[in-house]
Image (cartoon, rainbow, N blue to C red; front, side, top):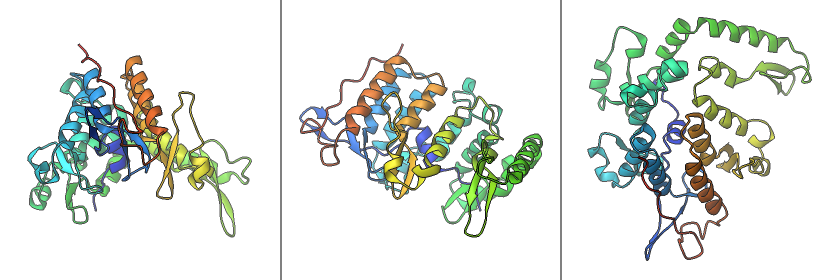
Length: 335
């Protein structure tokens, strides 16, 4: 069994939603209908990638945006010819590979990466770096042959995914070896939660769980993951956003899920497939802000595009100038 990093997480981090757009008489649609994930009208992938590529030129996020655009321009049959690309199993389209994205996120900034490795993002950063290394091995033979002397260098072939990945057993070893103090604090918090006898006192990092025959106070699951991620890791924002949408009444009620709007007009969450999830655009903007990359120009362009696309019906989403919106010209490249 391998520890496959969440595809949704990496896709959101890398802004790697599938591409789709309409081209009509010089009008390129600003929007596209995301049938694979949210079921909502979203900002076209090519436009977001183009804006990021222009305004983040020469930086890792501009490189990720450019590579995303390049991969999505390939047919599935030619996807394997580019090392950074792979076919998305959900939509059957070519997109940036999880291994390439994870590697770019985990590598230090002086090496051309985002610097979200173990030093800044704790265990999650280490898992991204190890998973990225394993995903470079394309066959079971090459995967199994790569076994180092330390847990972070181990790989195992996952038959279900038909891919090389980082084994879960090694993640547990890393956790026990490098995060003893954090685990001790978690245990103290878990004991404190267990001692609470009512919903009124079960607050903070504790959650009251209602059972058929009995109820109890338990530690919030997210606390365990946050405990082994450094405080300044930008990925904490992403996890917090997901947790907020998957908790409380929003998790089981579509109306409550989609009624939460921020001061900038963005929806916090979207409902799709019977579940409440973080709005991809909200995650995108907040992550860029945490990384110090959200300039006023970039924020204005993306927010304006989001508001236009979110107001469209499914029927008009990709219609460009015929009931929809044509994309504005891309900004001048950053110097």
